[in-house]
Length: 251
Image (cartoon, rainbow, N blue to C red; front, side, top):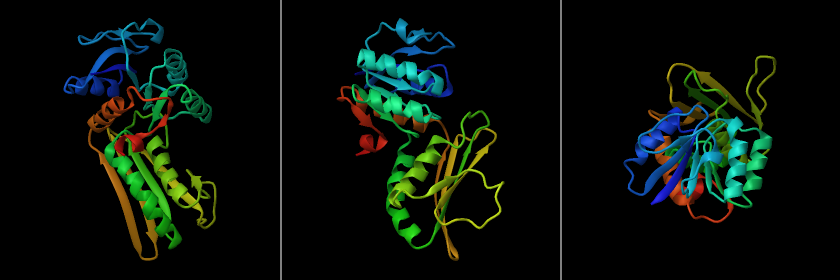
């Protein structure tokens, strides 16, 4: 059985992961960490990582970008594999993450759902042909009005999949309000919607002459992310140092 430390256990995703873990015979949450603090009947919750005394095989992180550096240092010191699901990390924080992966197993994914990661695979193949045929690419992502970062990490990951397939020479554009010019061919537009209780909706649009192809993914609940995180935990536990993503889990 894989023993999990849930970092950011008091948030929405923390609650959902804890709930789903009780239904998985191969996983157990042994402890949680959250600055807010909370009492759980099933496992102890600590304010600080330094207070954790339980045995842990892997960490699942759904916290905030500000809390990730300290977590990475703790995982490096304790040699504990970690799954970083938190989005909105800066370039410096991503460099820190990669540096830690030299000494401990680190899995980072902008989105933990199986569907999104399969769409990434499909996009790498489709984009090569569609962009070469003159199609433009635009991405629209929609999330609830409480989400802090924009665009979503998933939207960037989808754009990266398209861009890498095209040779990496496309620019990302998030706002066109200050310019008056025709759309350059070598750009990917990314638009964000924040409204209501939308869990997550992503459209990757390829628009050509007289035809449009759209790859869409809609998340109807956070259960898909929780399931993906628990699947990743079972994959990462016991793995050697290195940088992993959900594509490795699905391989």
